[in-house]
Structure formats: structure tokens, C-alpha cells
Image 1 (cartoon, chains in turn brown, blue):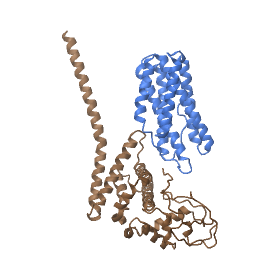
Image 2 (cartoon, rainbow over the protein chains, first blue to last red):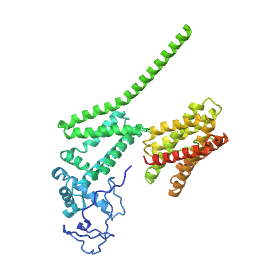
Image 3 (cartoon, rainbow over the protein chains, first blue to last red):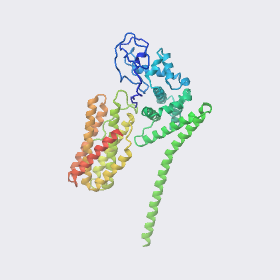
Image 4 (cartoon, each protein chain N blue to C red):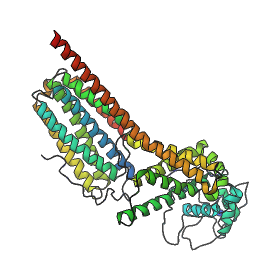
Length: 292
Length: 193
């Protein structure tokens, strides 16, 4: 389940920075601010106010309204995607967004559309990775259904899914700790949490989880813990191809699996003990009655 | 009447999730699942006390139907990828306590509890049917069929309760009101958390 979320308030209405003219049916709203200069749309002088225009939705999908009409949301997604290329160099900053905008032929002031701390860029990236993961898991599931692949045991499935998702961080690993700290800012926590929970839910869904009781929560909580701790380990891992991280992941998943069987063992032991006590009580009472 | 006589033809465990009003369907399935779960526990509590009495067979039969209902909602929950309510462990205990407690008031007490709960559930199903009809009767045809069938079953339980002298239970009016208030609260909470 994916929800529409509103990103941090934009500092200024910057749609006017679009220097590209396409055959748009819609006129771009014009806005100005004392702080920035804009390239204004040559023929447009309608100050259409659009304070609550479409926000980037962190579901990774922009809606297509018609073929040659691009919504503001789609444009923002394109800019952010282009900006990712510059993150290893500039970090999750407005500079990276500005460079991304440049590659699309837009003015660098397009970066003004976004929050200055890079929140939207990071959330966009996370959402993109989650979408990629879902597609990957969907493909795998299709192969299994067609009989072209073996169904993996649960622990292996979880390990592979988490590893696949974390590997998407590798090109950005230098700057990822910065991203994590930005995601912990109060205004990003709802969006970040939503993305995390839906990703974990997706993984369990494809792993074949069909629980409809409290296990639903336990499993997701456990997997979230595994994912988060593995992510942190990865930040500090300097081994070749992060093999230490994958070993850590393997151990955590194995722990989680054994937790389930341990719980069962405790329960059966408890039941056995109770039965033993009952048997002892019956024996004693029989002995008493026979003696009396 | 066979319980859960409507079959949901699902080709896989998933239904097409595109195009449905996810938040609305989520709530409906979550709260209905919680309701059937609670009803199961209520009957379990009643059987624990009155299982070997004269009404044991009647309660057992109603309980069996609730078990079928719960099974159906378990399937729907997986198919629509709905999260169960966090309060399930609580409904587990509360339901059993309500069932056993009402049964300790005697057979009529147990029947009064049944009448109160089944009336609440029928009204609740009716309002869900209205919601789905307002949304899109075609799109939600199968879900509507299931809920209508279940509503009829619950109505039947309600009538059975009345037939077995529920109204003669001690403090019937008070008991009924209190239980129905509890049901309203349970429904409100289970929809949201």
C-alpha cells in the first residue's frame, strides 16, 4: 500500500524557471520572489497561483495525463532522477539537483523547487529503489509460478531480498550516512517510515507470508530490525564487496528463524511440564485414596 | 443454511488491487476480520461454560458458522493484502471473557449476549453494504455477496437467540445496551488500529 505524501513546503513557486517550451496546453504559472531571478515564460503573463499544485508522490510512479502533457510532478521526478548521477560528487544537496536540472536543459534555479536539505531527492531515491525491488521480486515470483525457478526457503528469500535492496545503495554509499541523518529529521519521518514499512510488507508478501494474526506484526518488526541493523553495518563495512555485511545479514536472519522455533519449543516444554505435574498430582491423590 | 456458501473465485491468492478504493476496503476487511475473530472467541467462552448443557448444541452450531466466516475473512485479508488489527490479542481475551461471563449468568444470559452482538454485527454489515453499493456495486460484487451472506447468517443467530428466551435474561436491557456499546467501541478501534 502506498500513500500520497506531502513533501516539505517549497520555498518558492519555481515553475517559471522552465526555459523549455513544449506544445503545452497548460500555461505555466508565474511567480516571483525577491530572492531569485527567473527565466520567465516568454508569452505567459498570467499569474496563476498554484500553491497546492501536485506534489512529488513518493510512490515512484508519476501519472501520465496525456501524451504530450507532462505534469509538474512528473517533471520533478525527472529532475530528481537526473540529479542522482551527481550525488556521489555533491552529496544530497541542491547542487546535485541543479546539476541534474542542467542535464535536462533546464535552468539551475529549478533546484529552488525543492527543499534545501535534499529531503525530496533522498525520498525519491528510496522510493525508486523500493519500486525496483518490488519489480525484481515480482519477476522472481513469475518465474517460480511458471516452474522455471525453484521456490526459495524463507530465510534465503529474505536474505536475498534485503541484499538486493541494500546493494542499490552501493553507488551512493559514501553519502548514504548523510542521507540517513536527513531522513531522521522530524519532517521526513512520516514519509521515511511509510516507505520503509511498505518495503518490508512487500518483501514479506513475496516471501509468501499469509499470517492474519499478531504474527503479521511480529514478522514485519523483526525484518525491519534486520534491515536497519544490516544497513548500519554496511555503512561501516570495508570488506571486499561488503562480504562482512552479507555474513552479518545471514546470521541475523538465522537468529530470526530460530526465534520462531525456540518459541515453539518453549511452549511444548511448558505443556509437557504441566502434564507431568498433573500426572504427579493424580498419582499422589490415588495413592492417598488407596491408603485410606 | 450453509454457512459461507458464496465462493470467492480467486485465480491466485491476490485479487487485482488496481482501481479499488484501498483505504475503504482495508477498513472493511480489517474490522470484519476482527469481528468474526471476536465472535469466535465469544462462542468459545460460552461453550466453555454451557457446552454440556441443553443449549450446547445450538451454541456449537452457531460457533461453527462463525468459524467458517473467519476462515473466509482470513482468505480475503491475504488476497487484498490487508493488515490485521493490532488489537487481536486483546479481542482474543475480551471475547472469551464476554462469552464466559454472559454464560455464567445462565443460558438466557448467553442468549442475550448473542442477540446483542449479532444485532450489532448485522447493523454494521448493513452499513458496509451501503458503503460498497455507493462506491461501485459492480467492482465489489464478490465482496458484497460475501458480506450479504454473512449478514443473513448473523441475523439468523440473532433470531435463534431470541427464540431461546434471550429477553428473559437478568437485566436484559442493561446487558444488551452495555454489550452493544462495547461492540461499537470495538468496531471503531479495529477499523483504525
